[in-house]
Length: 149
Image 1 (cartoon, helix red, strand yellow):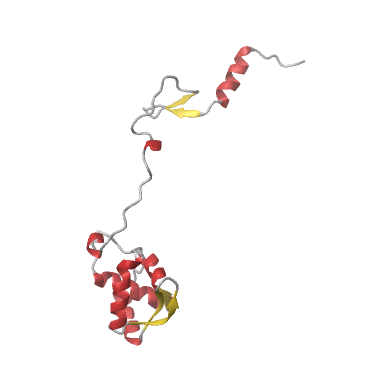
Image 2: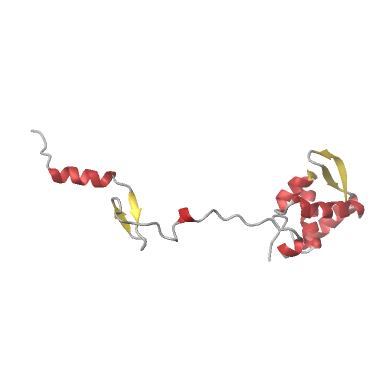
């Protein structure tokens, strides 16, 4: 005996194949919406959010000392690293941390181990820098991304 098929069976199957759409009130509606216009709040109308790159540490809301401390603690853990990787670790643009790295070199806290691509260097802590990084680590072990205000 063959199963009977009627028009209601086809209507149910057609509804299941229609995409799920949401109305402006966020309630689920099956089937195409007729006479609908895109709302101003639809996600497709907005471009994705990309924060602007900060141009100064003041704009970020951190001090040079706070960022330098993160750099020293990171180098303590990594032994040596390029300036751009350090920049990536502290989540600040390279042009903001490069002067801090040069100041640390001038203060004999880090030194250049080797050149790196794109006018960068591989940095390593000096003995004095190592002692400072240990002292800072005893105070606080956090050495990840720069905390912004």
